[in-house]
Amino acid sequence: MKAGMRTEDDVLERIERARRRKPKVRETRITAAHGAGGKATQTLVEAVFVDAFRNALLEPLGDSADLVLGGTRLAMTTDSYVVSPLFFPGGNIGDLAVNGTVNDLAVAGATPAYLSCGFILEEGFAVADLRRIVASMRECAEAVGVTLVTGDTKVVGKGSGDGCYVNTTGVGLLPPDRALGIHTARPGDVVLVSGPVGEHGVTVMLARGELDIEADLVSDTAPLADLCARLLAVPGVRAMRDATRGGVATVLNEIARAAEVSVVVDEDAVPVRDEVRGACELLGIDPLYVACEGRFVAVVDGAHADEAVAALRAHPQGADAAVIGRVGPDPAGTVLLNTAFGGTRIADLLVGDPLPRIC
Image (cartoon, rainbow, N blue to C red; front, side, top):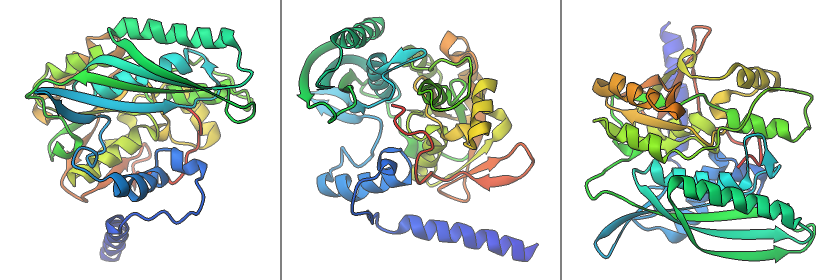
């Protein structure tokens, strides 16, 4: 037993030593893994971009930057969308772009207000498809009360793109006294998810038609501003993050490392639809690592856990919200998963991505 404990401690110490090393990109060329949201993405961001542009506003690496301009507190975020296929059950690249940017503002506690939009179009792309995408963006923007105020269009040669890429930047208003951040998580807090996980990633993967798997699934892409506002009416909300690239597991690792705490998750408590679970089992992937586009992870003071869950479940988008784990003191910076089989394992960041090009 003692030898086993020493082995476990040795493993955790080796993991911690590796994390303390200065990030370094060892590859000489960019690979698909660098855009997957896991370890390779984190290393690229920290070793190249943060190292080059280092400043106090950038370094928190939140879903959006917290800015003060002329005495007004703002949140600002930007994202690029390269999903393939462009149209999938439940949505398309247009509503994905608006919802994704609105959600980055909403989980920061901001009220979304304005968007910019940049299109990179491939020569030969159908104008009718472009109109469908733009119409979806307009409908989504109107639904959440944001206005698209500026943009840009570029056309690249045939074969140099993938039909259509979209970049959106969003600006929202932050209350002067709101202070959210994953670094504020502390032992005794609970971790919630706002609904079933993995639906977007699995839907997009099946929509490609490369696998002989059929499932009655649609993407969960949706704006989260109203649901986030409902949760923020509850005392003790520490942080929210939308679980996009890298899924819920990646967000949990970000929380554990930023706050220097442990996050212990009960696998059975994580809401996953049967269709998603079945597809993931066939493919040998974990739903916790599959992207969502209409779900968020929240850290809430444990004393207000029931109130937080009730607030989410009172909204249609949060009907299946659940507490999936708790924050503890040790081992700091680590996510532990209590499995359905009664064991415990470390749920670390992935190196690559089992589902490329999903957002």
